[in-house]
Image 1 (cartoon, rainbow, N blue to C red):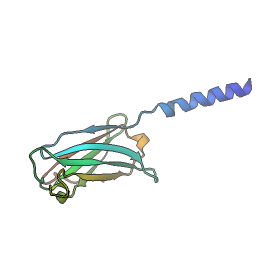
Image 2: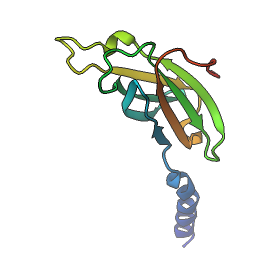
Image 3: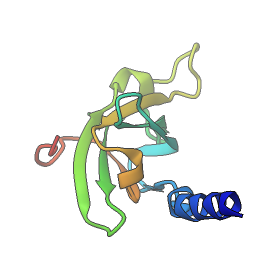
Image 4: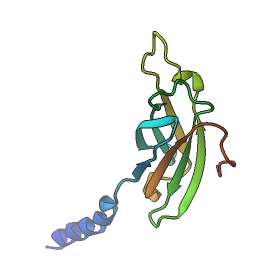
Length: 134
């Protein structure tokens, strides 16, 4: 009976950890750049990778200075950190070899995924306003 109680208590202690939801990705729209996909995965060193694919908006040939603002929030909604990920403009140029141009991105966040409640991915083109916090 003691073993059953120990197993039951171990299960109850493990449930809150298992029930923590994965971080939510909030993808915003941009005028010249569109985020087509975004994924979160844990890094081996305890940080977090945000990666995905972006593409030019419909009717835009190659946006000037394309970049992403990535903002990580904790589970209470407070900002943990902000990062600006610069995209390669030449990836957005359509050609015979790339009729549907797209640019992949990977941003490293030095925060454990379990501490992140939401990540906002906001595409921009042109000069970025201000500096990233990391």
